[in-house]
Amino acid sequence: MREKFSGMKWTMLGGGLLIFLAACGTEEDQAEGDPGSTEAIDVQVTMPEEMDTGDHTLETQVTQEDEAVSDADEVIFEVWEDGNKEDSDMIEKDTEDDGLYSADYTFDEDGIYLVQPHVTARGMHSMPVHHIVVGDVDQEEIDAFDQDDIDHESDFMDDHDDH
Image (tube, rainbow, N blue to C red; front, side):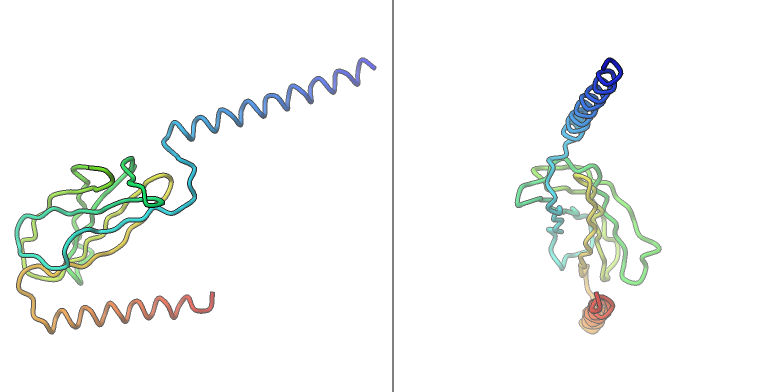
């Protein structure tokens, strides 16, 4: 009888330890700011699609379940001129105000630029791409860019139709 009680004692002790460790893990997740939502973060670039050359503010709004996300772990804006992604600039956010993240940037030359905020928040990562026409750009160049954009979206959908 004594041996059986001893085995039961270890089982109870082990079960109690598991419950304790599980509770510690939950507190740790909450301490890191994880609200436990499985809904994806939504990242929207809130800049106009046309602007003049010069100094501007890059902006992106981050939400989750229609609530502002003001605790993003990382927000970096990547900016490049169309066709020159290898020469992109990476700019860390300067400010945050109720889920609106921003950074200053100077567009020196006319052209079509792409702005891609890289946002890591609440264990998720999102990086949408937004295009901006800066300065004086020929309509033909804009039309060609728009057509390329449509072609890329079509290729993406064709690649994923079988899934």
